[in-house]
Image 1: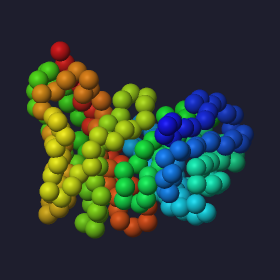
Image 2 (image 1 turned 30 degrees about the vertical axis):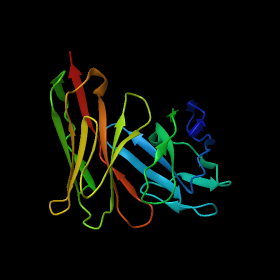
Image 3 (image 1 turned 120 degrees about the vertical axis):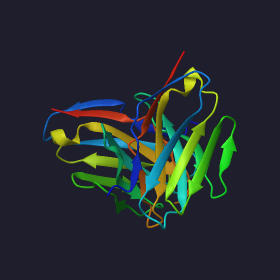
Length: 112
Length: 110
């Protein structure tokens, strides 16, 4: 039982490049989330998916897109990376809204 | 005003000490409250949920004060392994928005 997995662990991009961060959970959770964590800012919600087939914007969605591929997988895409998107990205899942969330190990992204 | 506010610390305490953290939240309709622990460069991990009646898990006690809109975490008999950042998390009860505090840094000193 791996919990929440994320790939890649580290990534360096040049401004304007695109990439997709992958996330998968094996806990049969309905809800999945993408956060970014920056120094002094705490975790901020980018997008979430309350259930398979639905996605909604969070606090900081600009510059990102998501896909809930199936119940297990939720990906985050940066279409044209900017230095402001340098951050640590965490994926999380929960059984349903209002329940505790479980986090993946994170992706450390640097955009130069 | 931020949805969730925490004193960033740092709190430096000797082993065996008791330490308490508070966290205030702005939305009086919030229904779910949690404390997470985050070690350096790692993912947040659930420490405990916070219930209206308060709850205890070993050396850790969490309390909720709805009237004053704050939650607290008490750690008794601090261990070196308790050194971490403690995150307060509040669900706004609208949509799936979880709001995280910026964290309180704790270092337990031998």
